[in-house]
Image: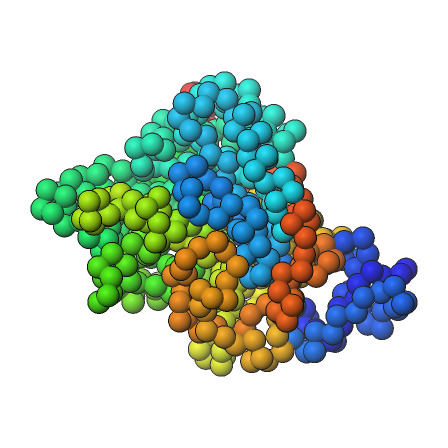
Length: 503
Ligand code: DUC
Ligand code: ZN
Ligand code: ZN
């Protein structure tokens, strides 16, 4: 066989092991066709010498907001996917969002396809955000989405007036998705607790950005996470709780997983690296805390970070996503919507942080590749599970994305050998269309030297983004895999046959 590409002299990392040094990856027609030694090359074969560096699967970022109507100043597909590829991510799954007045998902999907087509440097898929789950949508449209359109996951919100669904609707969605092998993602924060606290803060004129973190306490995430898990348990349906920020809530996930429920959890870089002090005003800018407004909010205590790092290491988290949800800071349509007649009003600040490009390096920097063993927060295989293999499995891309193995798409991150890639994150080095990064000044021990998308170099740190804007293709996804736990259990306190009476 004549290979199109051979990557030599690397150390391949998979979700289960670090392979012996010196194995070569042979690529033909965009697929990994073999891993071995002494692979034959011809004058047509491109050779990349990894020079002893680690090679990990191209990142799968399964929580990304691009071209969203409610954040018009953030990234669209071109700049968001450019930023992804420059940070080692080769697949993104972004949100096609149903507005309350949308009574069908077909136009939503058509519009979202139109924004992404030929506008992506990396491969992509869509999740639906459901805000109006009518019986027609659940029973007539979702089956078509799953079986014909390749969309096998939905996200729900338990909070926000414009987006929230009630518990009955959550149940309806869980049952419908379970039947179709779709994964239900849920934003778990208690709407009424938060609304009550915001009223009090506004009455008492505590409206600076920092009070966003006071308005959404850990107990609000704790209560909603437990409720979401209980609803999933009643429905016997797999679920992923997105962007978990605090160990208080993650404990419910751990308990559920111990009982073998198919409950999955996601966390994001900002919850592992940043604290709520970032929402306080800088001396020269009383509104600067708005840059760090996201929901759930950054937490107060270094112990919160520590608890989440433990759940990264011990397997509780299934995925590590960016939740790239960008709104420009210095823009009256962005974060400065929260400056009303010059007065800060945190409740008006758009929620969300940019982070699509920094996700991979931030986590890789905490592995033994960049840290002495006693300081490393996670192993290299765990890095691969969280950033690529698990999201690919959970969202129906098994066998195609997220692994370095024959038959998979040749999506690779080739890191710098040893410490050659160490850098300090700064806005000036990034490729998003944003005016800040929340990780300004954070040091990382390495950065992707090359990102390879289906056998083509799309990012070279020496040359920049070298892939094409039309390179990214839409991914028709299959049924999601239950990564942890299993369906078929009996909810706590119920008899084995009870469900049969009401199903
Ligand atoms: N939820 C998200 O998933 N992203 C940004 C803000 C939010 O509430
Ligand atoms: Zn959310
Ligand atoms: Zn999000």
